[in-house]
Length: 293
Image (tube, one colour):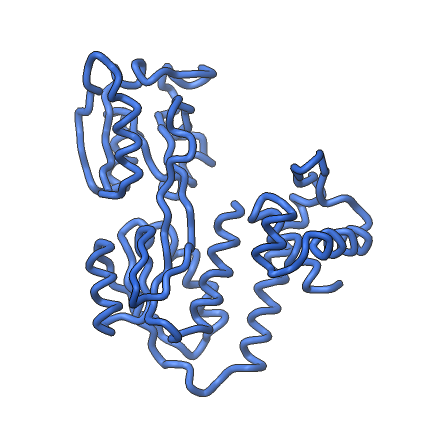
């Protein structure tokens, strides 16, 4: 089995189309198609249903996906060990926002420690501006921040986390196909405010109403907001990563609200240009896998 074919499969899922996968892999669209077809022949099954310009992963593709991701991780790990340079640092200092430390680092670090078994990792948390300053001052090596760019930093998109309204499982909104902004405004609301511009878009869904939304509690801590919803103190707009386990368990339920499609928090990875390339490439690869889920 050709590892490049497996890589193309994962990228098509991550990017959502053959064309976008081709752009990400610096290939032509026919080349990506040929790689997928070759992989389908190897596996003797269809991995995608093609409907015009859209592609939909098949059930066979869904079953193969975790193995494809593991194959890529194993290949990259082996490649790193074969080509490992002695100049790899013994310690990498990483700065991150609280959200990243709570929900991304627990998935990130086990994979990095497998790839870099001789490297120690030190984490510090802070807000985006603090982390940017620490990277610029060489106090930390790599930073996870909100989607920012800086002329003196290398910045790459790591993760895009959709924001949705979440309610506890017995809430009257559960099971309704469509909820209006006015109906949301009448409910007790726990408002998680993290300072990102995307939260202004959440505010705007209420701006044409005759009355202000019933914001009972405001907090800058997503864990506190989530637990308040679980405790039925209100409903809350939250990033998907922070509630993934609760949604899987059925204790929290996402509710679709008009005007909220496309609202998301973007996390970027920043570093000084030209430094820590091996670590960054593996971190970005892990980010692609996280975005698939």
